Amino acid sequence: MVEIITAETAGFCFGVKKAVDEAFRLAEEKKELYTYGPVIHNDEVMRRLTEKGVKLVESEEELAALSGGTVLLRSHGVPKRVITLLDEKGIDYVDVCCPFVKRIHGIVDRESGEKQIVIIGNPKHPEVEGIMGWCRTPAEVLSTEEEASEYTPKDDRAICVVAQTTFNHNLFKKILEIFEKKSYDVTVVDTICNATFRHQSEAREIAGRVDAMIVIGDTKSSNSRKLYEICRKECDRTEFIQTVSGLTLVQDGSIHTVGITAGASTPNYIIEEVQKHVRREF
Image (tube, rainbow, N blue to C red; front, side):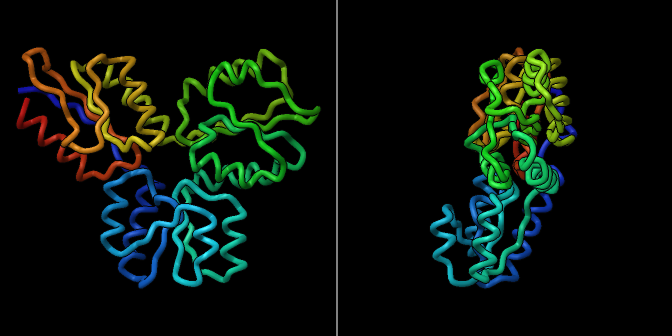
């Protein structure tokens, strides 16, 4: 029988669990509940919320058109102007932004007056878009070593560096090394959350000692994709799936150990379904 090694850190992190629990609680309590953007990046969770009557609002224009109800502000956080808009319209809202992301909002809001803000992360990710929306002066977003090498400060102000909470920790360190070599006046706040660091470290360790690795997560989930990239470097037979139906891995006699991890927005029941499938088929 194949040995299955499931990461202890697989699945919901603290911030995601809190957001999802609150979303389902409000879905039962509120007659008219909207969510501004997906609460988390997981289609299965959003499908279940939609079945309970929760409506998805995807743009600020749609948000501005609302005349009532309660709006759930996603776990990735939103720009300050979105909260201002809701306050001005007098629309009830519940902010389920991850506390670690909320901390970054406070940092850039405070520091952006006197310092240039550099965000290490994906410029198209809603978390980064939200962080930019709390900067009082324009922020720069860098996601690669090449971009860091080419970066030049726009003025003589000191630089404050923060990171998307789910950014690859090793890549973050490499980008910081580039900044150090350039001798910039830099204040670094390592805002990659501990859960992300533990997820990535444990995934890397497990992938390095198994015959096959399964990463479970939504394709839109940044932290899930990064787990896959990390595992793929350690184990050639790594699959990235959203649910058990996407698994194509088959037992050919050479698989004796299978590792399983999951992104921070993956529900536990999906992880259990994959575990049961592997036990049955392998």
